[in-house]
Length: 246
Image (cartoon, rainbow, N blue to C red; front, side, top):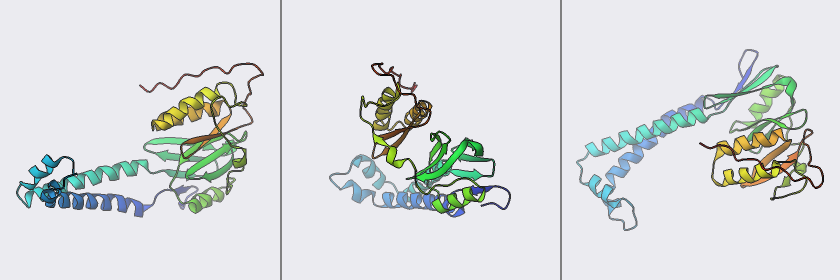
């Protein structure tokens, strides 16, 4: 937490030191070892790229070892940069909360939020209709998040009050709002194809229909919110196109 009127929860300096110091060191060590053991690795019958290891084993030492260590260190720095960009930072005050990751920012105002909770590995903010204002993957400490939100008067829940309302989605399941089944089908394909951006966008579209989705082991569970509109009897649900992935 900061000393001003805001509380900030992030990964902390220790995590940055580990990434920017540890990853390059591990990369350099791995590169040196691979170069030093190239001849032995090339003799293993099951190893791919045998020709590459044989060529490396014929290069002069210690020059090749130094070069391999440098390449490994650069790879570690790139990995540390990606990890730093992926870190979530949550800033809370009495009026709003801001989530930042990878240069992108999401925001929710206090009057919009009914409940804040951590659901598995996700930070979730629910609105007055019990729909999701925000759901963001978070590796942040639950106790620190709880303390930050409560310090500014935000309503914190230890567990999802609607967890029992979720149902496993299967195609053509009755009771869904019009168009939701098509979106859930498209989202299932996005999850199977590991297309995270598509799955996220389809979650937002489902939220506009009044459907909240949570994932467990690549299966989708759903519940409806106060703004869900059910199809009338005998009225077919319209088909929704998949998001443009170009």
